[in-house]
Length: 123
Image (cartoon, rainbow, N blue to C red; front, side):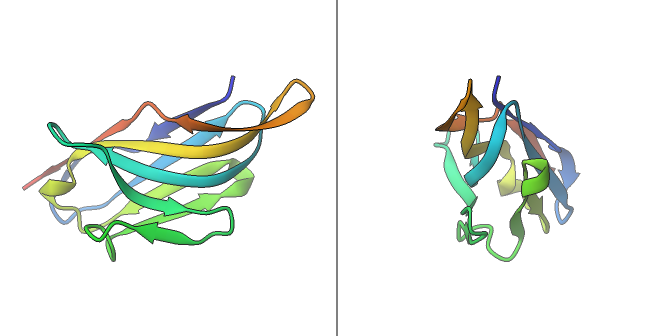
């Protein structure tokens, strides 16, 4: 079964750093585009960072210069390095990816979401 599993969330003081990981498991052929979203209590889910299959990256204005999205294609893993964290970064962070995976003998593209990982930044 294909799935995305996030890890690396936790409690950190303002100004600190965390690195989130999103590992794709199952019969994965490759990760195409991948993104990190977050959702704070009472707010809509928002896009934080995105990377294309070619390695390009885009960021929300609120995290530019502080967050870095990267990928290790050999490990089928996407990362989000978060630095200079602020209390307003507190949210559940979700990984989203367009994966090419085997279904039997066939390759199929599909979008997947991880289960989310909590990031809490204390002031």
